[in-house]
Amino acid sequence: MDALSFADVGNLREKYPAGKDKDFREALGLVVARTKGSRNDVFDLLNEADPGEMGLAKLQKALEQLGEGKFTPAQIREQLKFEIELKEAFSKGGEALARKIFRDKVRKVETKETPTGKKIKVFIGESLKGKKAGDQARAYVNAHIDAILEQILTPDGSAIDPMKWRMVREMFENTDLVTIQKNNIIGEAWAAAKSKVYGKTYEVIREVRINILDDHGRETGDYAMLDAVLLKGDEVVAYKEFKSSDTAEENKGTQDIVYDRLRKGELDKLRPSGPHAIKAFGGKKMPNFRAMAVDIERPSGL
Image 1 (spheres, helix red, strand yellow):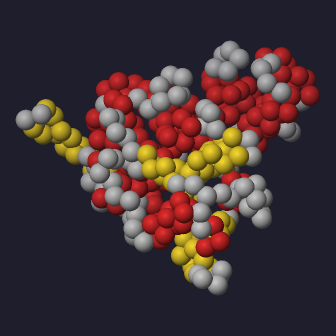
Image 2 (cartoon, helix red, strand yellow; image 1 turned 45 degrees about the vertical axis):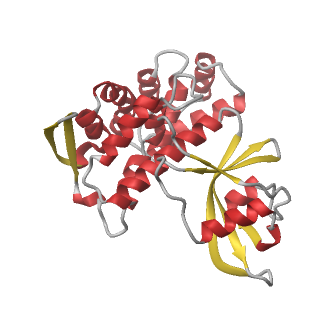
Image 3 (cartoon, helix red, strand yellow; image 1 turned 180 degrees about the horizontal axis):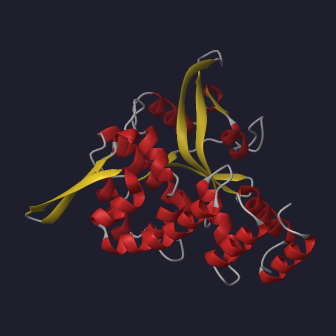
């Protein structure tokens, strides 16, 4: 925390008394490390994030959403404004929401009258439509996914607001992105929202890889990903697959094999792998890996 003196840190701790000292130091350390500016810039940004006791938490959150690296005060201010402006965009919907999420990547918006009312078509810049379909556009949206989730969840975070979810889904559906891009973005937003809701009660481990073994216990190279594993302490309580619509088909092939073996208890024909699996199942030897059916959730009624 070279930009701040010991006296500065002490004064800030008095201003932000909530939580443990360790969490305070980590939050302040992140703010200093990622702010490309002076001591005064740090103090100004903290006050602009919130003049009260939430300033440090809000600034930390904005910097975490920006990602790794150092950012100028102007970049950080833009991120701080995003949540407020996104909330306003949700109140308007349609074009306003598209322009806020895709920002300068919106080339144009066309509106036409239909029997059910106005319908928009959002044209996205070519820079988000690269050869790897969905990668660029999805990354662009995911950079602000936490702010988007705050708007589509109920105030207490315990459920997804049906009207706001429909608003977001329809906005993505009304872009000129190819179908696989739109489905990837909508699917990831739905999975992130469901994980956020479950995170109120459980520890949620996302994207857990399960490898398929042959009859001799050797890896075949095929695998499936669980959208989420829910933990209560060390206990694995559920495997989750989040489908973003009632009509979305289950993936065939490797996913069928993995899900069937989990349901039947044929764990000797499966092998979890990767850091997410290690965290989900209690260590490198996966002592908590267990058999159970995968719960497939769809947004019925939303």
